[in-house]
Length: 84
Image 1 (spheres, helix red, strand yellow):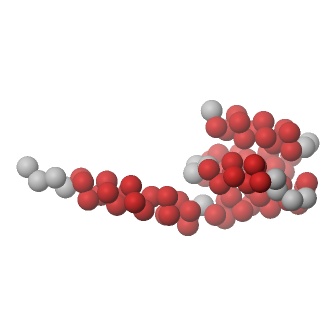
Image 2 (cartoon, rainbow, N blue to C red):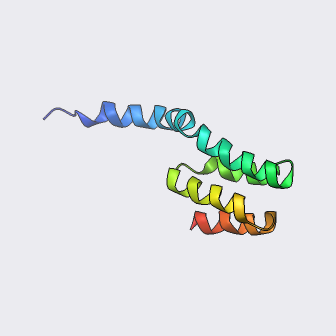
């Protein structure tokens, strides 16, 4: 039997993260822009956490939180909840 899955698995392993980086920067940038607009500079820990998310749905939730949260402590709490 011929192994037809291995090439696809190898492609996914090598190119999935670069693909995601191209596909999601706008969503990540929007979250960071909302935080920057509300609170000034985006703290590095928050920027790093935002960059780790690959789900568009989670990034949408974080964008809403960035718009309505009262402060960065509340936003950090939203990030932790999104990680669960």
